[in-house]
Amino acid sequence: MTTGLTTHPLILDAGTSFRAIARAAAASPLAGQTPCEQWDVGALVRHLLFYAPVLAAAGRHGQPPLGPATESEISLDAHWADQLSEAVDDVADAWGDPAAWSETTTMAGSDPMPAPMIGGMVLGELVVHGWDLAAATGSRPEFSVDVLLGTYAAVEQMAELGRGMAIFGPEVVVGADASLLDRIVARTGRNPGWPAEELA
Image (cartoon, rainbow, N blue to C red):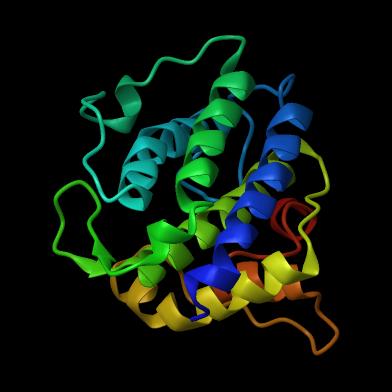
């Protein structure tokens, strides 16, 4: 894992890309399918909004504010894309500070973990769920090469742990010519060819 001094700009960069994806998705139906079988677009957005304060608080080495007890309790309206953009902006602001990557931190009272490990998870969340949202709403995600390289390293580090916790599915095999983004999402158990290959 890279250090905070080199990784924190990647969070800011990934946040900018994610906000562009959210803006492009603003008019999409919340009932639309996503690459995650158990989620429609609304469920994906609720998941992101539920965990954004937790991730931001971890970057600030503090506790998240009180909020809904479950993801399903989050209410979405016609401005959900703005709400999501603001939430991601807060996460990027927290982890865009080099101090976020020092020592250890926790996620809503969990056992302390190395801050760079959690920061890598945050980077993966932005890129992988950004891809989820873009694929579900018909836009093309644009992440910089540096962001993708950092995300690939983070996903490689936590892949087996993620599978053990049922956060990631079985790795999808991709060709030797697959893009770096395709390799990342395949490592997490997603089909880079979705939806064409899934819905055929």
